[in-house]
Length: 575
Image 1 (cartoon, helix red, strand yellow):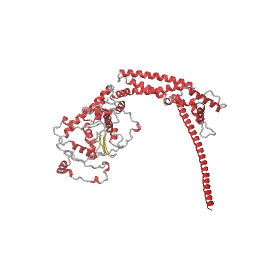
Image 2 (cartoon, rainbow, N blue to C red; image 1 turned 120 degrees about the vertical axis):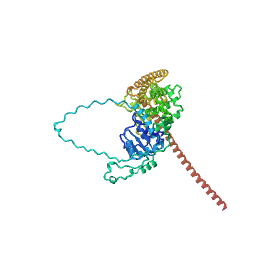
Image 3 (spheres, rainbow, N blue to C red; image 1 turned 135 degrees about the vertical axis):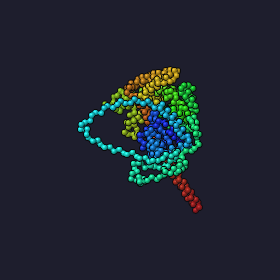
Image 4 (cartoon, rainbow, N blue to C red; image 1 turned 30 degrees about the vertical axis):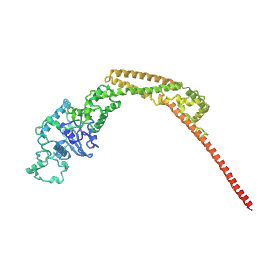
């Protein structure tokens, strides 16, 4: 993380800039890592926390207290002055950091200059004090029964008597001990200790001051001033989340544009078309939040010390209505593709309605199914003049009682192949039902309404030419949508359905499912024919092999007979 690159980057801000920080509500919840701490610190508007991370130590600066976490466990908690008196981890961290930067001679001047600047900045950002509240109403007279009732006694704990420890001549390095609470001293041997008289040895104290001083002399000139301090400010710092800064830097490297060029493109609605739509969509993710704007504004005079991501976020934070401008630019770049997508869905429903309405093969097939159904339902359930199209997908539910695996749909396909071969090309005649069954009329209507709403929002940020062109395209889209509704209602009524109840995805989905089942039944029938043909061929081949085998046997017998006869003749001649 850029912010946590060095201890100086964060400690200097905490020590001298006096950032607004966040009150702690649940100090016993330890963050998992530095990014979690930083994310928590910028959740609320106008507040901030500083993080110090030496290896596995996290110090989270709060308004009311400082919480020191070591490997997810709270080890110290309290105000800055109190923790310094503990001479614990926090005090040691503080002293070691100051030792790296400032000498003993110039530390007072540095604190004075920076604190004066911080107080001025904070006083400008803090809201004005509200008027004092009205005085409370007078206390009502006490009830007679309570006038002489003694009040309960209250036990106030006695203030802890502090040790008379002399102040060192300079800040010393810390002894990293863990104090026992003052409330737990009683009853231990520590309460019985007598004064060691260490503080009376002045020479010893001077030796400690010189041996364990927290400062290195000569690092900065004694005549230090505000201008000279600028060179000691941290370089390449970051005030935003490290992971967010890293992702932003990656995005900027893909854009291959300077901050100025990006800002100009946003302000001009990218007239030169340098930023792709997907890049605009990514830029929206890096819109500076209110907290980030406050942090970045504090570095407005030193933006050169910020990393690339922070400088970019600062520049775009200066653009009025940045987020709305970027959304308008994204709308402009995606408008044509959005209109084409909506138009494609509208066209699918319109063409499917026309195909279903005009298909002679579909009419002939439905007439065959009607006759077949009346024949099978002879009696009260028969004698129908029509049926709902949803019944098409129930043909497969009626199964043969004599042929395994044969359904009414398979039988229908067999009959069509034998008697009505021209109907086999029905899927090609109503092909648009497949894309049309994926169109939701509700979603389509909502998307068109949203497109008009978004267009109205960007009218003050886009060019007049684009707004006029987009308005014309949208009006044409709405006209075609209205025509689509009319076409669909007509075809739905033609098949005895209510277009206001049965939507296009359901209506055309029935025909799409039927075509799929029709093709599967046809393939099943073809497979069955091939299997029967193969079985017949196997039987014939087996019979043929048996015949050949028998003929071979007789030939072998004849051959053996000839040998025996030849031997007989030979022996007879010899005799």
